[in-house]
Length: 232
Image (cartoon, rainbow, N blue to C red):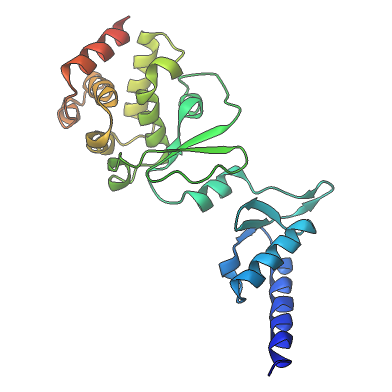
């Protein structure tokens, strides 16, 4: 018995190694291998050191395709789906403003808002938690809709258009930009007051007073501040 167990372990590790090396364009975690946890961690780490895997973060490895520069890094959108799956995830910050053409600035790092605790940063991907904004998940918002709410939240620092052009762009997105205004209106119930004020105004100006009425009021001070900034 004391001899056979190590032999079985070695055979299992060899089979797991072969399975990983035969794969392409997929992630690997220790739990994917039918090995004891410590053995699986060791095997994946060893393959990463041999440049057969790319270590994405602790416990997550990528088996892609080799190039003259070694094992390639997974595409950004693939990493995003792996570490932050599900609805309610979308661009934030300058990435959101650029994606929706409120700004021409291209961020050095991609920032994404997630409707839960933010995962650890991965490569050039950065994350910000929006765990309290549960309407995004309940309404199953898509990335563009999340980006729109993020721009409304950071309007003063993200939008480089003048007020009239910025409003026109927001109205265009709500009417012909592939957004679902009814879902945004319902999701806004858990958004900050400044988001609600801007969304209500844009919905009303786009001819959707019925949806604007679904967006809860903000406190008077926030409403006055946002309204004044929009017409400045």
